[in-house]
Length: 257
Ligand code: PEP
Image 1 (tube, protein in one colour):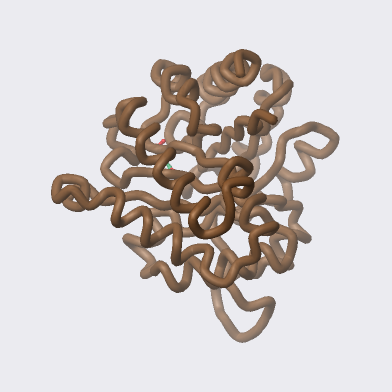
Image 2 (cartoon, rainbow, N blue to C red; image 1 turned 30 degrees about the vertical axis):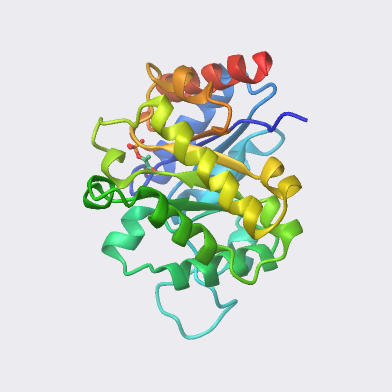
């Protein structure tokens, strides 16, 4: 069975609650969600308002981060049960901006993946090489390490339902996109690593997105690649029109599969 394309909009630290609500109304009023899965990733304060706004629609909500403990004296952190209560079904884990600015490591990513799964949140696990690593020919080595570590100690059934986002760091927010062929090569490699960790069936099932300067112009050629099952979109997810255009591209690819 064909994997369902999943288009997620990572708003990063953009949009107030009223802005998030206005965007969501515009999206619901203008997009056709048939055949694809659409996820919005607002900042924490807008999670619940956006979850309410999408209630009764196929759109799902993701947090951009979580902490691995369920509760406790961890000032400034938010747990998986809290995110579930706030209406989340997904959570982005290990985004390169969190690895770069907030000390996220392969080990903390693994703890967060386990916490998410323990509480019924689907992790969107971000992996990807930095520019210097790509130039040193280390892309495959880096993503292999990140995937192996993220899923260490995770059971096959739970892992296969997760989403992996391949996001080359040099492509995030830079306007520089991986070519469809390069992105396909890494996504296919990640699927192989996942198959080695679990089984061919799990590899066939797990969804692997591409992220990094995805736009309405380049989405179709990226999403048409056989091992690219959707996109994690930053900048182009902030305007409803460009996000809808990417959803449309995914719908066309899905129909053709
Ligand atoms: C992201 O935030 O995950 C991302 C890929 O950003 P952008 O689309 O702006 O490169």
